[in-house]
Image: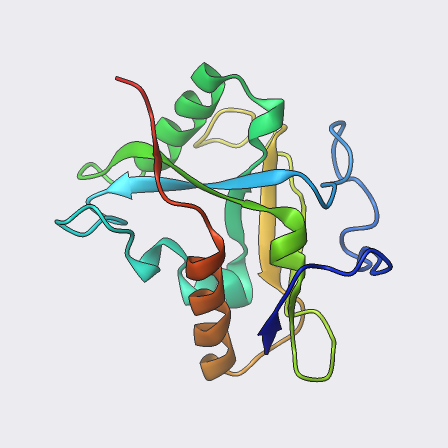
Length: 167
């Protein structure tokens, strides 16, 4: 498995090629963000735990992300707080971000993509507010557990340092 910049000639995979919402496709240059909750995703020293990318979510459920360029700072914080509200112990403290082309550059040794990244608007969900800027990352195919662990390691390395919300 390798992680390099996505070649310009690489096209969207089939799950990414059709926009699922009104905001359109996630462009290669677009940043996506993962909500970071304390204490679930942070160590005592403030570093990010690998658990910010749960293997089950990568492999089967899909990893929930947001498209910050389509949200105001206040909207990003509102949606992040809704994510954190799933656990009474958690507080949304910020986000980590990565450019879509970096995520899509995660490839298998045979050159096929490891993950897909696509828009996944949340509408009429009974638990969280509508979020047209929601996105999903998921393994491109069924992969063994050790490959999911490798994908998670690559995501940890690819995403930025924590960008904390202002108080």
